[in-house]
Amino acid sequence: MQLQATVRQNQYQDSVRLMQISRQASSLPGVAKVLALLGTDSNKKVLTDLGLMDATVAAATANDLVICVEAETDEAIARALAEVDARLCATTSGQVTRENPKSLEEAVSRLPGANVAMISLPGQFAKLDVAAALEQGLHVMLFSDNISLEDEAELKQRAVDKGLLLMGPDCGTAIINGVALALANVVRRGAIGLAAASGTGIQEVTCLIDRFGGGVSHAIGVGGRDLKKEIGGAMMCQAIRTLANDPATTTLIVLSKPGDPEVMDKVMAEARASGLQVVACLLGSDETTEAGGMTCVATLEEAAFVALGRRVPETVLPEGLQQRTEALMPERQHLRGLYSGGTLCYETLFLLKDSLDIQSNVAIKPQLKLHYPVKGTAHCCVDLGEDEFTQGRPHPIIDLGLRLERLAEDMADPTVKVILLDLVLGYGANRNPAAELAAALTAASQDIPDGGPLVFIHVCGTEADPQNLRVQEALLQEAGAFLFPTNAQAARTALAVIRGGL
Image (cartoon, rainbow, N blue to C red; front, side, top):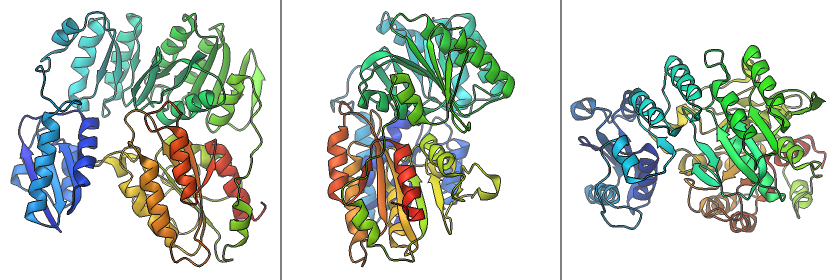
């Protein structure tokens, strides 16, 4: 294989678009990998680790585009570079159109009545644009990360003062007035609103609400740091007030990992004062309680069903699971989890924490924490969406490449009994992830005497998503995977198999 890095000066591009282009170019014949990324300091560290740092790359700025190609021949490298350039020049219709606006003010003037700005700039450049958007009276969804806590607190207070939402920083999911923003799903409209500090948590809960007959008014993501003491829950409280003032919303779900105790008290008081039926899902809390007009639950699954006014359904074992379990070799003892959704990984760890010692890069117990590359020797669950895996490469919701490599390793391990996977659908996600995963499962299970580890998959999505939930599930079932309607059911069934109690 040959490696080459090329710099395109002053060609800033949205990071999500660069991830998609990288994946598309990587599929060319003779091309192993393409990374199209901006010349930020964090990305340069990735390039250094790959051995691609030279004087040209070192001189690149955060506004410069660096294209790295690993391929078999010079000709394959040239094809990959041409593919990247062609896709950078094309719109979704494949034609170059009107020149993009050069400022926020010009963008607003072109779209009268717009009230939301989505900002995805390198963190060090985002503050001024967020401030400008708020001054224009726009709600903001801030996809960027690497914003300082001080700047986040200042910008959120400015938004609160103006009665606006600042979703983020590092906000990857929201649904506003039925419109899916960034990585989000197509769900029915309804009376359940969410204020949440979790991206895949929003996706799991909203998809379960849709799957079991309910609907969502809005799902407001606030970023993962809002409940820290420095931020004070400013946007979580603002989101709750916004939902309380929405006539279409009658039920409120507050979703987060536990934050600073004083901040949590403030947020819970705001929720109680909303006048809405409140479900508080604080991941990692130990029990379900009801007090003061609020139901507190511990899992994403419970949050969805309590909000729907339904009991969590009993787990129905997939057809053929008992027979496959009985056929496994006795040396198979271990659980492995390969997750693209961090909150889904955390939910699994929480559900199994009292029964199994599971190593992880997001472990609940400090003594079980693993560092990159996060390869455990016994029970292990990995959040492949954490920063150590996504610097310089697409998120695993978009690109399955790394996860398929890890899957092949775990399938070949004779001590592995169950592999847990999530598959997240929706806008911004891989266009047909089940096809890639099914092909990998089929290839990995060949020539294994007992058929290999059991593979449990929960698909987080809806039938209205571009990938279609039922189509994706059917592909995975044909490849021998066992499907579960919730992440929690998959985790609990995996525990039963590990314990030999099916």
